[in-house]
Amino acid sequence: MSYRKELKVAELAVQRATLLTQRVFHEKAKGTLSKDDKSPVTIGDFGAQALIIHAIRRNFPTDEIVGEEEASSLREDKDLSNQIWELVNTTKLDDEASEEQLGGSPKTEREMLQAIDAGQSAGGRHGRIWALDPIDGTKGFLRGGQYAVCLALIVDGHVKVGVLGCPNLPVDNSAPLSADVGDKGGEGRGVLFAAVLGSGAVSRPLSRGALQDSQPIHMREVTDIAQATFCESVEAGHSSHGDQAMIAKKLGIVKESVRMDSQAKYGSIARGAGDLYLRLPVRADYQEKIWDHAAGDLIVREAGGQVTDVEGRRLDFSQGRTLKENKGVVAAPKDVHEQVLDAVRSVLGSK
Ligand SMILES: Nc1ncnc2c1ncn2[C@@H]1O[C@H](COP(=O)(O)O)[C@@H](O)[C@H]1OP(=O)(O)O
Ligand SMILES: [Mg+2]
Ligand SMILES: [Mg+2]
Ligand SMILES: [Mg+2]
Image (cartoon, rainbow, N blue to C red):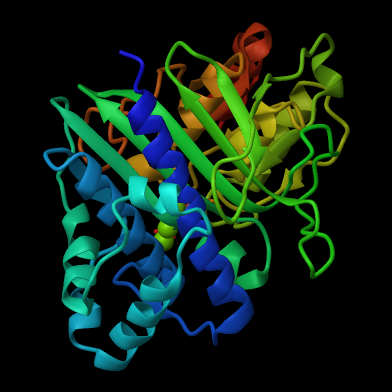
């Protein structure tokens, strides 16, 4: 299957949602709510989820959706719900045909809340399931750092389409890897990554209207692993900086790691700005969420990379809302992945 329509809808929906998140960053007070697990959520997360789920339901009404957020806290907080509605109701792509392809946006606040709540699928190994992270790296978003709007289509447990909107990464695929977001105007920033299984990966500038032209992206060829650049989370609570530093040392890497939030890490290595992405578990009981990895996993593999967990198993998206059969992530160009994995095993094995 070509998944042509799925790809187009996903790209446009992510592009529109990034506009909403940027409006939140530039125009709104960025208050946060704390979720049960103490992680933050903003009006940007809810608004982006509403717009994207609306577009999926209009175009693919029988598909299931695994979305990170849900609306119960908004039903109890009218003021917050109103703020999100104002954003959702007024964020549109400049291009009418593209808006039409998305099926417009929710018509009422009630419809918006229903859309947010339509992301409660349990996931699993059968059927068509969209995995959605409306803002990945919420902490990065709040800091003015990197974040990503992430959407993937999983069919019978396999990722078929992946899209990442990264408003604060440079458009230029050859720009040096840095978590820096540049000047306040955002000139030259904003990139949309996409991949379809078997068709390669591309990037294009994020725009305010129709999709711009894309170009293919590839991982960089690494001939000497000691020269590789690796990226990791900013948050030490999300992956172990200590173990990652030991692995880098074992590989002879002397360059300092680049720390950035969100799946922008997957996009960055897929276009050869960096080479390796290591995410080593901090807590034995944390299960990675499918929406934190599905799009990035496909984009990196389609750009010539391999993505596994710390034991060398491919990420298994058929296990429900989490990657419960996996521990951590090791993403690298295919040719050196085994070498990186050996270093990971030896560091983790000796603990
Ligand atoms: N203990 C943890 N280990 C790994 N990832 C985590 C942990 N706690 C939260 N996360 C998730 O890490 C993601 C951000 O990753 P990164 O550090 O690469 O930017 C977020 O989606 C966040 O989930 P949440 O949305 O619940 O905060
Ligand atoms: Mg996330
Ligand atoms: Mg999120
Ligand atoms: Mg979150």
